[in-house]
Amino acid sequence: MGPDRLQMQRLECKYLISERQALLVREFVRTHLELDEYGVNQPDCSYTIHSLYLDSDDLRTYWDTINGNKNRFKLRIRYYSAEPDAPVFFEIKRRVNDAILKQRGGVRREAVPLLLAGQLPGPEHLLSPQPKQLAAVQRFCQLMLDLRATPKAHVCYRREAWLSPLDNSARVTFDRNVLVAPEFSARLDLELNRPVRPFAPEVILELKFTSRFPRWFQELVETFGLFRTSAAKYVDGVTLLGVENFLREGRPNGALHSAFRNGIRRRGVLRAPQEADLAD
Image (cartoon, rainbow, N blue to C red):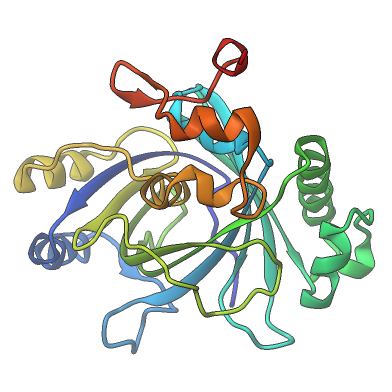
């Protein structure tokens, strides 16, 4: 991968649209933005993204999203290839009220097992000597250890990304063919074991911006009659597969498992079991 054009702090709006709508929206977007360099010369204007999500044994970050906690985070390891020298990125995606904040640091592939085993990250593990890269990986590892997080799910999809040619203030992405499968190792493979497709056949459209909602974004939404929704790939995949398949490497047991299996709900929405639920 080339230069990092990650929006470190942004607001975002998500929409689920049909493939036919996606092609029309693309024509609208291309009058304002340019195609990401990794999509150029690709027949579908897209590239493949793989993410390994980490979570605690009781899936705390999953339940934080399900329960709508305003301040929450996710830990994921992102990669684009299985080549030995291909970069791997440790990412923290944090939501604070409506804002999305990201930290990420590039890590050498051979260092991944060491860091996930609890070794303190150092400059020798990183792809870049930049202090912010080291700080991001150190923070990732601190949160991982505090949460006792381990690999839980492999998420893969094809991304078509459009960027501003002038700055990083606006970005539009189309995510297609989202696949999610349980994964309890850090093998960073490209294959998924019996995945599900939580959004098929729809496309996830994301409008990302760093300050005010651009006027042309509003025109796009009105022109195509779009309705904002949620589309959390890891969370929706776990929900579709069943949380019991992600507890203790798919072998849940005891009171916690019983609470999940009993389908604890609040106002029709899944929620995390509370102490009172586990009293028996």
